[in-house]
Length: 405
Image (cartoon, rainbow, N blue to C red; front, side, top):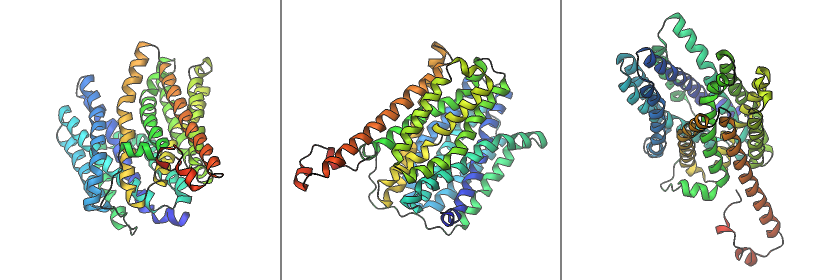
């Protein structure tokens, strides 16, 4: 395993550097727009247009990777990110920033599709869970480390944007030097939302629910903390605890998914997340220490499931379909991430701040129950097939005799 991780080290280094830069740009632009006196509506458009650009990029990434390959696609997207970030520094206009962030969303989607499919393609089935978990852990280091680097750059030299441009550029170096073979993409790539739902429904439902709920909780968690009575520093600490939980538990859960059925790990993760989310609405969560512990557990369960779901989807396709499956999975997640915060925000406004975690608990619980139903159905079919002839198996009404997923 460690030899494989060493071979993909260049990809991991590039994606960490790039995500660190992107995680610095996002809050810097919002703060700059606020300092410039922009309206809250226009400031709110910045992440919204970024999300829409991300969805568009997921669709375009498949054709781009097939046309020019992985290394050139990564180079194109990283260079575009560096150029757009520099233009943000040169053109201090909120409307222009909104457009630039939308284009950056396209570029980030290309980057993520490229690296996800590359790592998934070169990783054998028996190691996929832990390697994808290791890869996800590295990317989460960028999300955790970005605020610290940003604070340092702003305090010392007030050139955080320029530093982000530098990081985007440096991220090109490891990928350009890698000797890792690029995935081959077949001439006919037909994986679509309908095909993904039909072939791997557990993965499809899982990533949509994760995008729909997790982005809502992560974006609105500081608001939840302040509204329930915590001071701002404690509210931000909740967000940190969630990210650290996902960072620490990502690899162990990936390893566990290699040792047992991935769907069983997904079921347990969703159920734990649902129970903890309900606990966050109880009086025990009013205590700051308990709230941090519960948020840590929630982050460890909920924020670790995406890579396991992606691994489950890759397990059931041919190697030449890896790129398309990764793009479709990423698109499914991003569509959920656009609407989730809006729905959660409306529920919080019309009911109470606790609706945020109840919203998460309901959908995570339903996702866990759905995957459990799929596992039970698969087990029933396997038990029946042990005692049936081929002719009798063919006469069964199981849909198209699809893989048991």
